[in-house]
Length: 173
Image 1 (cartoon, one colour):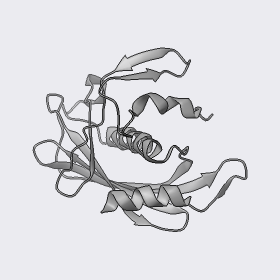
Image 2 (cartoon, one colour):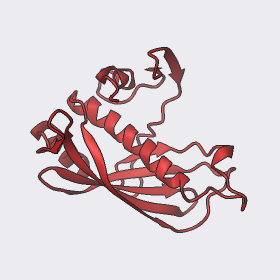
Image 3 (tube, helix red, strand yellow):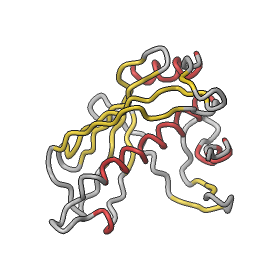
């Protein structure tokens, strides 16, 4: 099912950036408060960076983050990117992930405090790439998703709206 647009609202302040402390709604519409995930810093040409919370459940028997968990970290960063995009355009993001790939560079451990840097890669008519880099002291993992702008009513890919394209292009500069 789709969440209503209200789930992004608490993440923006008047300047169009994420708030210092945000009210959010859980899946049942109850208000919850949490610290912001938006780090808002440029890391070596990566315009957005978000904190990663390594949880005990993410750790495998070898004592490091299990490889499958990186996909979840990418998903969380993609959701934060979509919140950022909504703050810029006030348009509901309507994407599906058509492809995901990742390259592992080194293990990530429970005690580390990584960030995930995000930037937009190629932009097509109905698709755009999101590139991810998880950084602790060094790069831990890099990845990419191909995201397709999607019309859920017709169940077909559709052209990326001009306002979205403009916000994405502006982010790339």
